[in-house]
Amino acid sequence: MSRYGFRWHSLSGILALAFAISIPMIGHLSAQESKTNDPSPFGMDRFYARRQALMDSLGTGVALLFSQGEETETGYVADGDFWYLTGIDEPGAVLMLAPGEPYREMLFLTPRNPEAERWTGWTPDLTDSLQQAWMYNHIGRTGGKDWWIMEAMKHTPILHLISRPVGVDDPLPPDLELYQKVTARIPGVSIENSQSLLESMRMIKSPDEIAAIEKAIGITHAGLSDVLAAMQPGTTEYQLEAVLETSFKNNGSQYMAFPAIIAAGGNSHFLHYQKRHDTLQAGQLLLCDVGAKWDRYSADITRTVPIDGKFTPDQAEIYNLVLKAQEKAIAAVKPGATSYEVHEAAKQVFREAGYVDDFWHWTGHHLGLDVHDPSDEATPLAPGMVITVEPGIYLPDRQFGIRIEDDILVTKDSHKVLSSDIPKTLEDVEAWVAGVKK
Image 1: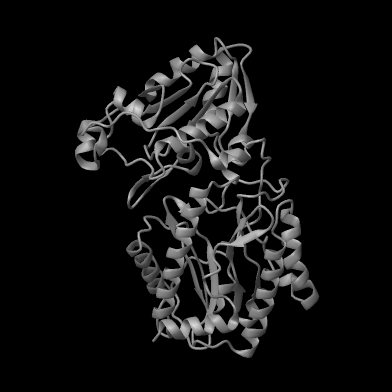
Image 2 (image 1 turned 180 degrees about the vertical axis):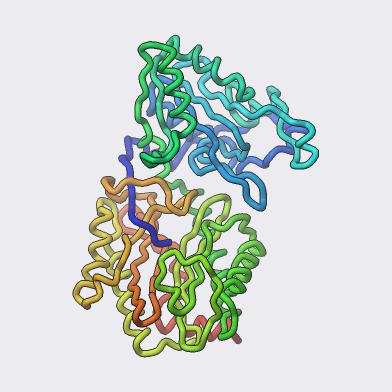
């Protein structure tokens, strides 16, 4: 999905988290507690290990993280940072980490509302079984978090900011807003910017995270095949979106990784086209920038295909140029490489061909829980990182744009194209279209 950049943060010595320890599950949920949102299929020990690694990096002080997700058609979905550390989708929940305190890990949930639960579903009781099953020292209600913070400040007057940064004109995030209130009431308390620690952890994917991304890619491949089978002159873009979404759900994907970009003809040169109102016509190209999720992890794939099944000579020329640029950029992906080097590898191909001014965006971004995972341009690529490589040429005067995108794992010595099974050479794409229509 075309955005503006690889943004990578320093690893801060957390590369080993990719092989995080396994902590045996203890305790069990009561019948009432089991009715809350299901915990992650990864197992709560995975999230416990992540919290321990983060606290080891923090050393001392207190860090709070608020669940800042959104309501979807399948219920509330927590933001990537909160889910990464907790594995739960509880709206209004707050995580408190205090490495130097007896209660190192605390989770605060919103008060129960029995009347509302009759409509929306049960929320958990606060029991010892829940604390053990979810692996916390204490689980309480959000109304009590302020007392715990003030108590911790008696021993360690440091508040760590670990949430994602926001723009200067955006509202203050809830953690920073709360921190400022604390510093105004307790002299000597300081706020420390520790955002890079959590970002660095998320940049390196563990084997099970990589497996989830690969599963999401496989579902995306199947969805694209279903779209191609339904693609024909007279079909609308929104009908193809419906085909894609149905395919994803039929193959077990609960969420779209992002709103699908399905753009026919001249719409394909809009980088984030979303209207989907137009009807496909003979001779046009169809650009599909799409991704499914599996166990919350995202795929992000772009293929540009001929609606008639055959590229015109003009389309074929540009398509092969974009493919060449992508292959050069992928070849540049290896440990120690920078985002600039990957981007320049693609850009140089376009520069030599006289199309560099028609390449309008950066070449890729990190991929994981979020389609644009936390990252920092200053950090070189390292094993376990997953990025996209997605050059494109956009020609409004010719009424088409072409982008090709794959998901790439950085390995110990080189890279692996996780989406290599999805056809992308000109000949393979034409054969793909012909094959799904038989």
